[in-house]
Image 1 (cartoon, one colour):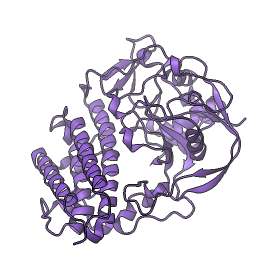
Image 2: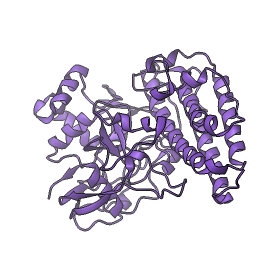
Image 3: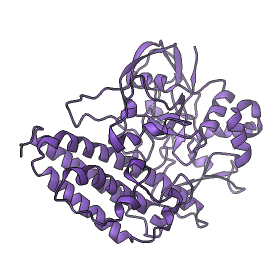
Length: 450
């Protein structure tokens, strides 16, 4: 069998990353009980136990089964039991039944993970031969997939804990109100961009299995932008409360038609996780992964758990609009990413205010200080529908179902959130959800025409 064509150090680095990413998932789930991991509290969510199994299934199905002849599956039924939506691979249980999987028990799922982890390590420590590029590429894709599901586990367990009548906290040490002094309470500034013909997306080096981007980020192509302005900071809880107090939820002129219909049907009065109370000056409390917090304590944090419809209505109320995904990407590439972005590794697990010391609002040329929190805190809704770029080609085979089949009735979000792993985000990353979705850490940044 042929020796590695990839440098051994690069293969060792991938194995180290594999172990780090897999360990991060287990570290996040460690505070949860087996009962916690069984809950599926809304149609969009999945039980945490299912996330632990499905991410393992991905490596077994797409790496070990086709490329490791000596591999023995952990359980013959796991191939279909933990399939999510890959129809070309066969049947799978309906998503709404995932919470009924009391068997296999959690111990078996953890043993399944360990079994696959050992097999991946054994595969990478062997000589990979002519399949080396495909193996390394698929493991890299599997790690990005695992990080996606780690974030989903965080959003799913938050909803599960919120719907529990006791409203238990995941993390009692979380302090989403810090720092107390922020720039978010002062008037927002706007940074001007001249527009023009810009590069959007990416085309990874086809000879480098570690040069990763999801297929929906490709290929790089040209887009013409009109001049635009982008808000220097995210919309905050304080900002959004003003919208609520101005009867934003009862004014149809602010809403898209489908948004107004959804708003009325769902009887929305505020973002998800806001509850009315007489016990606080503002009249609201907000549920976080640390339990309920007074809105007043969180007033200068970015507002989150908004649908696209709510974000769009707020933008109209503000006399602004949502940015396109192309404006967002171009603007992000013009500024330096913050080394202190509030992402999963900070442990905050909730958006934090923009520190006053790092704020530089107003117009003028783009600089490292002119746009804050472009990464982390909240996924930013854009005005762009989720479609393929010019020349888009899905991955071959079953992996082509990963992204392309969802390019209908979805809206793009950019930038990552406070529960996104830091190594997972990049300027070209395209998240997407149905416009009524609220259980994600989703918020907004305003844009306007000059």
